[in-house]
Length: 339
Image 1 (cartoon, rainbow, N blue to C red):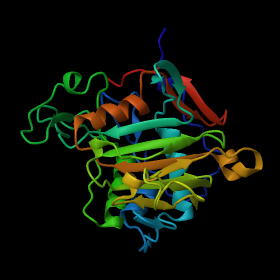
Image 2: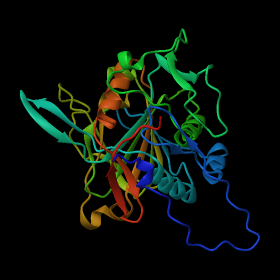
Image 3: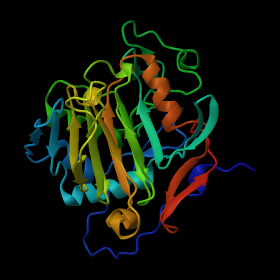
């Protein structure tokens, strides 16, 4: 008999006694949507209030290399907020371990993504708006959100436009963070996608690549927040066919990103630089090996190809994984709808 995911992941009882006269915590509320595999908990006020009223933070501009344009917030979030947000997102979001096949020299090659991933959002040709035929319930509910054309606001058959994956609205726990990032950078960028990676240990990684796909448009801005264990973020210039400046040689730039740090890549960076989070084994993994790391990136896709790409490689068609506190790891569970 099929069981809902929620039956496998009941919240652990609190072990800390409440002092006399303590104000009880507000009951948890959840966001629901037919495209979500689970109901996603809304952020508690201890997170949302601080994200809505962040302390001033002046980033360091890094432009001292050819074609490089970075903003480095060190940190963007306080240590206590970053720690709470890390544990909250790890426990409340659905994750995936995506498998897919690529052709290398005409030979099919199976790829197992070396990290846990999830994604929310839709490209700028579509948007989510309240369904006027559905009355919003007392809890925060995204069931009343429907996918529509951005210009005409006509409802879309997402099965036709975005097959085989249904776009998912950004849940409040990530949307409040998106708004904080947009306010901090204050350059007019409006993000419509949130990608979340969970690196369970120093063995999880992402190889050198650049986010220069056409579906992001020219000179895209991408903001990246780190939570949890420290991991090195490496940047190296793409090889130059002429062998001149930026020929890919030399020592990569290394940013040891701590929990709460944010790196914003802008301008010509994606067109000319590659970045990676390499494996860190044994003692080199440091806190990342014991705590894990969450990386949240904010992007803006301009055409449906971006939506199709992000859901294919960050959701796929495999099992849903949830964090299981008593086992200290992600555990696969049967995906069920919240309908």
